[in-house]
Length: 396
Image (cartoon, rainbow, N blue to C red; front, side, top):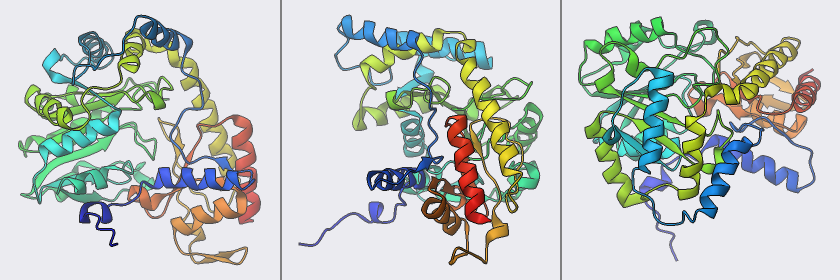
């Protein structure tokens, strides 16, 4: 019998981060001591005060379907958070709660894109952006950046990428995979270009907002002059609160976009998990200082990774300002033969590290930058030290 799958799924890429995590699990199942530096998942436990709120919700018998766009109390907590942390003022109809920030992105693409619409993606970009755009008949337009500019797109590059078909710009700051953060001045520079093109909408993915090692406060694109009515701010609790499996994300957006996302979500998943939503009310109402201990530890690990990698020839690194990744340029190794294996690209190099060093990383190809690999330091200091020791031995 023919397996008659749709062209849609046949043409879709598999998420490289999830594929590498699955490969690492498979090798562990075979008894190999794999150190996983591939997943963007904090290795901390969810804070107790949040877990207590979830337990209370269970005991209070929250078990019914939730409103499609989220409990009103949660939406009010999100509104409070946006005002407190980002100086953004939203109303209830402008907020939609979804099953993770990834669903937020899928909703936005589904309600905003028509066939042939172009979406500008500064490279490197989060692994799922391009496929979400393509799934909704959009065309990803990649704008290459390099380590020399800290992987940030310039206003001139943005201007050059815009065509009459440009509908949206999607980017994350702090960026997954590079850890780069757009400063207020850099966002204002991009906004000056966008003001000349009033029909372009922006997705500002701020899921790593609180994991910021700079002295400057986080700046939201929607807070920049002229951008509020054109920006969909995407956020969630997975990274800062170590709640990846709870699957709660949310948007703040112009109400007509938010209501369209609500309509779309109503036909796909409906409302997000009831217990998780009740716990997130508590999380977002807490002062961000409640999770500062995690950010402090991530900064120590970042510095540790950079120090250890600096001792390995061929790893060209910059200093990431946020998130929990380093994104070294490893093109030095291309064309070389290591332990009998020829390295032609970042994918080859990432697989080599998995097979020879037993360390899982992710190829930069998946993020639109074929010269780099992503290394997550969401792991203990001991694991990081052992992993980079193995990498050094494998490439020496």
